[in-house]
Image (cartoon, rainbow, N blue to C red):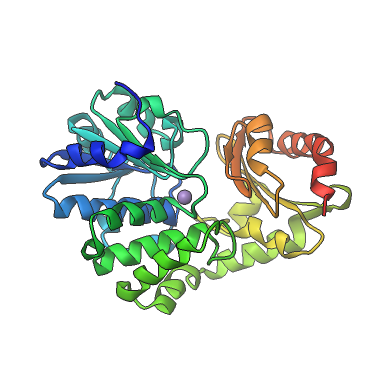
Length: 342
Ligand SMILES: [Mn+2]
C-alpha cells in the first residue's frame, strides 16, 4: 500500500468512513488521558456515522480516568483478551491514536500485526513510519492527539462536537499539557479548548475529576518520593527520583500513582531535567521531563530504547534497579553542557 502525505488525508479518510465498517480504535499501553480521550472522541464520531466501533487497549487505565464518558466500553486486553482478539481479527480498518509504533501498543502488538486491513494514524509523536498507513495525520507541534482529533472533527463541522466529545478531548489536552503548563506550541490550542469548554462538562469540574482524585497513599508516595528519594545532581542541573518495587509496595501502589511525580522537580529554578526511575516486575521504567530546548527525546532514544517529545519522553531498561540508576548517572556527563545552558 502506497504511503501518503497529510495533504490528502481527508480524501483517504473520507473514502474509508463513507460506508459503515467494523472499526477498531487502539491506543498505547499504560494509556493516559490523551490516549483515552482521543480514542473516545473519535469512536463517538465514527459511531454517529454508522460504523461498528470497538476501542481496544492493552491494560487498564488509571482510576482518575474511569469517569470519562464512554470509557466503560473499552476492551482491555488484560481483562477481555478474547473480545479484543476477535475485534481486531474482524476489523475492516484500524485507527491508531496517540502512538505511531506498534510496539507501543503492548500486548496488542501481535494481534494488530497479523491484520491486513487499512490502518489510519492520528498522532503527535515523532518518527512515524508513514509507509505502514493508508492515511495519517501526524503533527509534532501540537499539544496532543486530542487536539488533532478536534481538528479532524472541525473539518466535518462544529456540529460534530457533542458534550461527551468535548469533555473527552478537553481531558486529553488538559492532561498532555499538564493543565496548560507545557506542550503549547501555538495559540490555536486555546481556540480549540475554548470551543470544547462551550459544551463540555464545566471546566472546573473536569479539572477536579482529573486532578483532585488522589488516594491518601498516592499523595504520601509523592511526598516520600520528593523527601526521601529525590537526588539533585547539581553539576548536570538534573533531579533523579528512583522508586524501587518495595518503595511502591509500601504505599500500596496502584497503576497511575506515580503519574506526575516526575514533573515536580522541574519547579526548581536550577533544574533542567527531571527523571523518574521506577522498578516494575519485569523491567525498569524511566520517565524524563525537561525545560527549554533540552531534548529528552534524543537522550531517551539513544540510551534507553525510548523517546517521545522534546520535553517529555519515556524509556525502559531490562537490568537491575541499581544498574539502571547507575546507567542513567553514567550518561549524564555527555549532556552536561546542554543541561547547564541557561
Ligand atoms: Mn498524547
